[in-house]
Length: 451
Ligand SMILES: Cc1ncc(COP(=O)(O)O)c(C=O)c1O
Image (cartoon, rainbow, N blue to C red; front, top):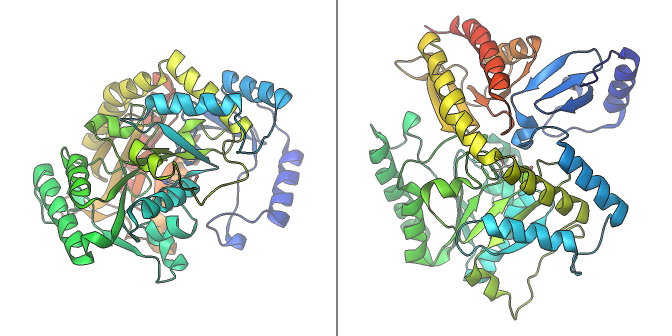
């Protein structure tokens, strides 16, 4: 790691950014982006010589950390050979990336449609579902994120949807399981599972089963809370979909490619969807890539009938070369097994130990390297540390916590009243412990807000 101080360079980067870069999800005048000078493995650093342990994996995508040498080399090699080629051609790295992904996806999800990211993957998945079934409606959960394009944001069940709504999406939201804040007055996981499935059945009955093309779920809900489904829930949804001829889509954009300690989160429950969407971890985001893994039955719908969708960069060679190298590196280095090991022996136990010391922790949940601390003012009432979608002064306790992490060299992932622990899947035990020690310090500050 060559970290040096070059304040003038940092200021120039920042000045051009503020003058010309229009940032996502932001009031442009109210943000202060950090100028990044470099990154390696689980760390990145700025131009002032400050180094940060990346406990966010950026946007939960750098599953193999920053600048993995094998992936960097594969991109360089591919750039020297063939930078780009139109999707209509058969290209070696595209074929190989599709083969490696199909080999790992569950069941008969053996055909891969490549996109540039997760939202486009979900757009195309619902396009396939609508054409395959001849139905229009899509059911998705509150507390979800599926991307920022038209249908993907309409399917999203968090406040990012509100400003994007047209009112004519054909998308209906329902409640998924979340035992800690049960909408079904459930007292345990088994009750939550049973009642969430009853609620889904009722939603379908009142929408009209013959109008529903697809149900889309994040296998483990990511940004909206790391919500791990109770045993039996996904199998129950699979059964409901089969009964009504509804396409079951699992969004594994965040949960896939090792994040949960399995290649796909669906593997934990032995459930096979009809369509599985991926992005992020497929190549750690080194070059934009996403896609849809398609079942035999849905693929056959488009055997004789053209699929009415496509992208100039579908299966981009640089992106596919980086996916091949990422998947190979993950397999060779046992990164998926390592992610599971970290979750079972370091992160899970470490976070539970923090919960013993810090009353602000209401619940610890997760698996692999995909964890959330749900922070509360009062453990008895479960009142969140900050109200849902709080801004300004109401959000201050979480903003203070994030700032305290950064001051101590830890880059956190914070959403509403939750702190997510989502380092790269190949973080060392020592790195994870370094991060947990910093969390221990900063959570003492947050404890001050409890009753
Ligand atoms: C579960 C899930 N689906 C879809 C998306 C959208 O992916 P992208 O930002 O690549 O369009 C995200 C992004 O965070 C995600 O977490």
